[in-house]
Image (cartoon, rainbow, N blue to C red):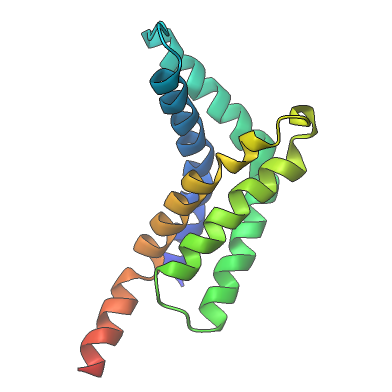
Length: 138
């Protein structure tokens, strides 16, 4: 159970940072002549901290409910946490950010960071359990 709590806390704390870095990567990749400077990384850090404060009060309980459901049903596969993370990211972005109405496609950018955080949760919380179950079945 300790690994599950550690996985939920880690994935919930990393989600805004992964999302902000993903947005930064997209902007640097697709915007020509974009001035990449060190101050930009500091800006990403502060934006991520603000997003963590804004979304953290909803993200952590939602992640805990999903993790409890996965634990309760005995799911050990990596795919359900990945899919749940990929669904939770855009859902929270749409529900919690009314200021981006009109550009809802930005919330779709949260699919990949959500999936990454779902994988991080699985890796911390369930990976060893899934491996030991596979070894026992052989």
